[in-house]
Length: 266
Image (cartoon, rainbow, N blue to C red; front, side):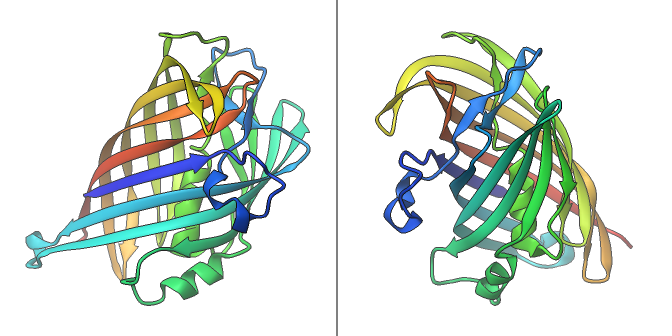
């Protein structure tokens, strides 16, 4: 079982170096004008945005079916990203760069720091269509396990925002995407239900709060050493997103619990 918690915060003063504003990084997204009811909150174009994404994951592996015991682990890290956007016909072109990953705690698995260093500088390019669909045009090569974990989050940063929403409005949005994992690939289907909760303060800025609940189904194949396996998983979660009066996404948080089964071949 996996339990993960992710927090993103808006860069209130984006010109301040990261070392001075570590607690105010996140996502600065403006709404796309589109002829659909639900569209992504999208960063403003023409500039490079910086992000800090804090995530903590607790994992329990039950190996009793193969004669093992239960294994527990915790990962706690911050990823620093840059995103550059350019207006394009029918949508927005995006370029992501992973600047660095910082780990917290002292009981880190062997090779964690080296793996983080190897992921530094990896880039992805993507395109967001007018309906909010994110398509990767190129993916980072040799990204490693950490780089692939970041990649799996990139097209879920943007909440689907109902244009002109008001307090108590509700809507649903679905995402169907592929995700690379070490030595394999997964299909991820997520359905998110939003409720507009009214006004709230986010880092001193007046914002509309959107509460969300979501369910995810995951299927695919992955190799563990020389052994192929089928992967099946389901997850549920809750979260919140904050949208300013100017249509800027001020960040949010998400907590998710995942049950995943590995069916080893043979």
